[in-house]
Length: 240
Image (cartoon, rainbow, N blue to C red; front, side):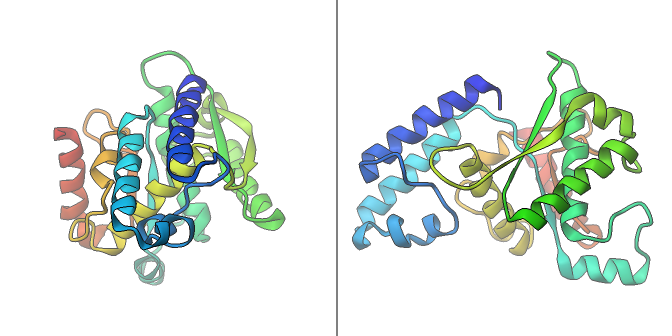
């Protein structure tokens, strides 16, 4: 998101928060929202719950942003590593996801349009975890990946990482909603279960040309056993 898009999101999200909660201090948080738990139960009022969900639909549909996401299928990853593995991939699940996500983000930044230097903001998980994720990004900046050279990461990304906690009104809320949808879509078989806002997020997913080799913003890994489903998803996004 650009700074202007970020500001527009905050204004729209705060309007929803004032309407439903009377305060902008609340934070949109999954999976509590879709389960109607805690703040989002509205005392069991189903009409209020439905109105809130519709307002969130409108927020996602009306916000300008470009979406990226990586889903790592842990059981399949363990089997993949045991059978053959990949010497170019990190062994840590988070590191694999970060590498694959940044490959796609850099592809987006490096392609035609206004030159933009990408900023990376992670949700803070704690001092040690934050340091580990910083190390994963530093590894990209210094060594690159099998598909993207280190010079490309240094050319298109800020070298420092920013961290934020999930609080108040912040685009991290959108990332939270998207990541939950991606989790449920992947866990549900990449098509058998379609989360409520999946199609809305799909309109914001980055893609170009044949959508292969990092030219599509959503990556499921490993996917050799469900390739027909992930290919169908790419085709649906391109045709939408």
